[in-house]
Image 1 (spheres, rainbow, N blue to C red):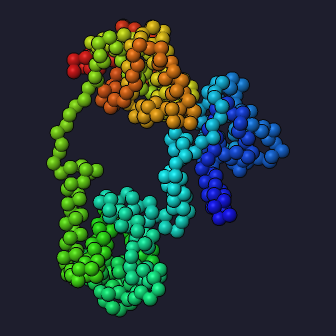
Image 2: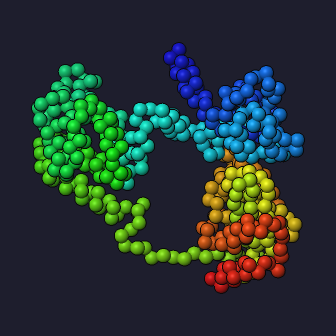
Length: 448
């Protein structure tokens, strides 16, 4: 039936977007399955099948089952894929592998993300990929970006477009009466539109050429101009379209100068009031500092960074009066994404809490993505989501537990410790006799 045919076709189109996230590796067949990240499958293997004895992905782990057999990965997948695969985190005795949607940070499928992914696939290999990449980066009003998107898809209701779906409809341009009102005619070739472009001093080479589609014309212009000028140019086209509508529906024909000046005023006002750009009048700056926890609660600030094949972390424990109760700094020889490095620092924080039997705890990090994923851990199908659920289960043993985000300026001590470890390459715990190097920063947090 048509329904099942449609479902089958959709499933085939979306197949490459699904795959296995690595847990214990027992469910993943390296020759048949997509796994790890998009593009990693049996097609990625670069040696003869007879030379690969491994069938399940777990056979590519090292002897300790907490990382990858780097040499074997190199032999099977080659130099280009080796680093990408070895960057996939592995947990010793990890959970079962999960089948996930690659294009959502939590691994959950949604029609919105599927649509975006399919559009991006089309953009990446389509003839107009430059145009599609540029339009959503335009520094202009959202409605003008949408207008540009409609230009690219040729779905503005020109007379030629209407006549293609409605028999007997006159497709002649009502403004000039000299030809079919296609989109390229309404935007460029109509004498009324051309008068506006010429009034604004548009280069004559952009007004020539026998274009049949508007998207081809605009894309050629984008190759010559910078983004600011392109934004202004699209704004002019938007005003030309509005002027065309005024003529047809209100019987008001705007002068070319009026249309151009409206576009210029809109671009100028957008630059003044646009909240994305730096304001013309500077805002009053407010300096934020470390916030003390509630009485009886200990706050742990932690930070992590990745450099080469090492992960560095630092954490500090302070009370409601700003006094230091302890901390930890160190590094591990691992290749990890930054979110996993921050997770490692978070786990080290909990280790020092259990070691000292503290019961009232607040964790603070400047890694917004980790905090957001912790808050959405129950809907996260990835391995990181599994680890965050494990951490939450451990937190149930505390009398009070909270994990919150703080800006970098409120996390200066942990950040300094992390950078200090990079220089000194050391692993160290400290109590109230904290290193003298952080004394000034600790004192500044306490006073402010």
